[in-house]
Amino acid sequence: MAKDEEGEHRTNSNSKLETNPVINACAPTSNSQFLLVIQRKVAGRLAARLTHEHTQDKCRHAGRRRSASDIWRRSGSSSSSSLSSPASLPPPPAMTTSTSNQKPTYITSLPGLDGALPSLLETGYVTVDEENGAELFYYFVESEGDPGRDPVLLWLTGGHRCSVLSGLVFEIGPVELVREPYDGISLPRLRWNPNSWTKVASILFVDSPVGAGFSFSRDPNGYDVGDVSASLQLIEFLYKWFSAHEDYLANPFYLGGGSYAAKLVPFITQKISEGIEAGVRPIINLKGYTVGNPLTGDSIDFDSRVPYCHGVGVISDQLYKTIMDNCHGKGYSNPRTFICAKAMSKFNELFDEISAPHILHNKCIAVSPGPSDVSRRKILNEEVDLLQNPPPRPPIECIEYPHYLLYFWVNNNATRETLGIKKGTVNEWVRCHQGDLPYDEDIVNGIEYHRKVASLNYRTLVYSGDHDAVLPFLSTQAWVRSLSDHIVDDWRAWHLDGQSAGFTMTYGNNVTFATVKVKAHIFLFPLCIVYYRFQPKLALYMPVSFREILQIKDV
Image 1 (tube, rainbow, N blue to C red):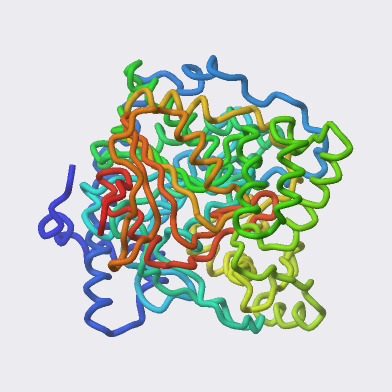
Image 2 (cartoon, rainbow, N blue to C red):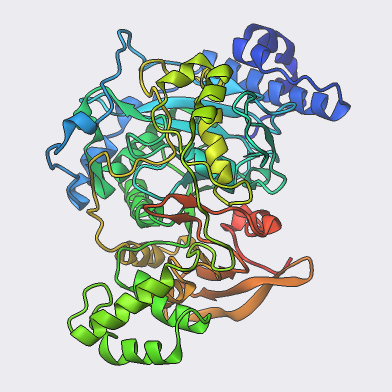
């Protein structure tokens, strides 16, 4: 379904560019020939997209397929607990018009970015709960290569209700925030990310579950979700999104996510596979998934902290032996003896001394915003008066400093207007909700879903940072090893610029495990710490070729 960029894309680029207010408002200001080429390329793709939408019934498959929720709800009950604290929920959006048929927003540049985006950005909403009026917000970034053929990757951010914008800006997306002191007056600046995964794939970033980022519900009951119900809503999202974007149905499709989201990814993958077998339309060209520093819900996730911390010198030989003799196999989190409880108390005391997401970095000490910060922000925008949850201000050298900048960039009116945010839905964007919305962790153990998907022979890549103490690679390697006893590519190094960038092993069921050198934890719940790229090139070279679902080979 690839389009002829030199033909159809070029034909209508000028007329469409003049009539689209979003593009006019965000047109690049640079006069460089390079940026002009990018602008024409993106405008051409946009023209073709708009023409395609005008002539095609995007929902022609809707009447032929059964509801994904109806088909798969038998596989697990969704969260049904009543709301314990309705007062803590966002107010129902005050909207008077139907928005079910609202067109997506097409964006070629962003506030704070000098010049055009390297590829087209599309944002929009998809209704996933008709009864409660719940809608998931998405960012779709086209591949910078060949979007007609390159894989499409669904990316989920870890944490119950953390915005996927973290994944777009801090992890694998085409832009990143410029780390510089925030003066409270100018808009935080963006720049291109030279290591974006969009160089080799189109990425669909989704704010999930309802309540994360800009996703919202008209009825407060729509916020009462859990692992299973949120996963089913994502499946519903995918079927509706692909029905409206049929040009991408033939593209290889993968799922990806980190930390807590890794519990949902194999579950969703399995259900999509079942849908394919059942003939659910549209047929998604599912190829596999990838998860990084994955949480499974099993006790193995955290049991490896003790041997890992011993191996890197956080605890002594004596404490390690005491824990092994009195706690091992009996539960670290719920000690059954006094000796074990005392030893684990000492372990936790020492563990708190390190920056667990990346053991080589110092812990950050943030400060609450002072009066001068508030007054300067009022100069920037009067609407900041509505903001109630500005994050603590960390030192600029702290890895969390860009998170501080992101809050003010997203909540700027120019940014929200450019992104096409519906007015009256989410008055204040926050990166992570800290337990103020109900959530049921009803996928108790994700390993069983990894095992089921592995039996179907889909491509799977599981990777871990070797300096992450939150979910150490030791535990991940152990449960991946339990998926198969047949090795087809034994433990070896994989390389970047002639140096080892980590180590990898592939099993007979198409499952690959890899460590990533000097990589931090992608996401730490509940502190919501998203990793800063300590080895930027690795972010790109992990996917040597997305056509092989991040198949790790020597480069």
